[in-house]
Image (cartoon, rainbow, N blue to C red; front, side, top):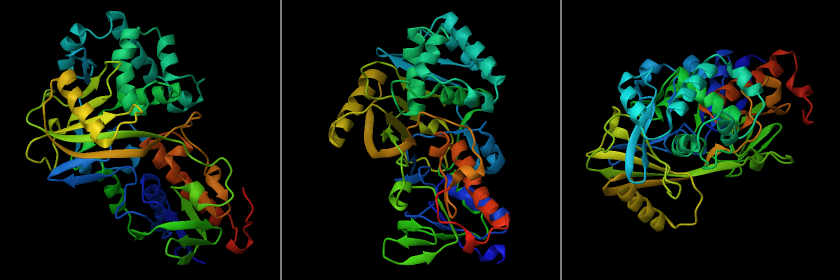
Length: 426
């Protein structure tokens, strides 16, 4: 059978599924992507609501991600750059800190900021330099501890940890206690140090849209739900079936594949609220951090401080909540609006939308930066992909998609016939 004749199904049109399709296409295969929703992206999507671009959760693209540089056309994405710093709200006042070596305008605010001592700020420069010299591979082979313990061991003061590191990285890790592995902290910190946080002009959803546009022979089946994946067939919710030689599963693995042991993925959640406001209290493209210990809000961002393709009529404010709570939707909205006024001096005009994201990031203890293609093989004809196999990042999602496709290609091109493939677990 020639390469075009093989039926290779990819379940899920998120980043890892799109990279799997791209890798297979490059070798002459014609994969079929099955997606339960109406578009590509998975957890990386943008809606247009009343003229505003609303990303599904506050997300950024770190321009230093190696796989992003390899697979994305940054110029075509028209990346808008955040300043390398943050405005911190505490006790009803605000102060700004950042990396003056990368943007001179942040020098004076950083030196005069009440957050952290001069010693803390020198330690940040030292950390920047040390991580620039440390490879990604070395980071993920390092001994691991929690991010909190790591920062304490580096000698940062409680003031610096609680009013900068905790709110900043809570927004990235989606957990307020900094229990995330120090490997992930070092990796993300290195990426921030070597590149910039950016956002495509059309929103974060432009990333999967661009990846889809790179595909020429892949077939997409949208609004199609899968009930189960077996060795030689994909079973759909409507009872129909499709014969398959290989299936790459990127989502709902434990629900789709029978007899799995310890394959359930734990997830971190967050809530992302969008509001119309009359004016921006943070004029520059800086993230706002709310560092008060008893605050529910973690971070805010005024999206129109960056150029956007669709801006709406007023200023757009994004608010992220990462703490767990038992508030109803109405109670949450009331508390967030009250905190914005009390802690940040922001008056809300109108609530636009709330995204309750139950599966925002995989919650993992053992993190890796890469894997071999054979490690993606669950069975000889069923292959896994997804950032949960490595670490919770767009870079990891891309790598896992590549490796899953390479695992399929290795099976096909090592001279193994489909008929002789064992149905036993690898």
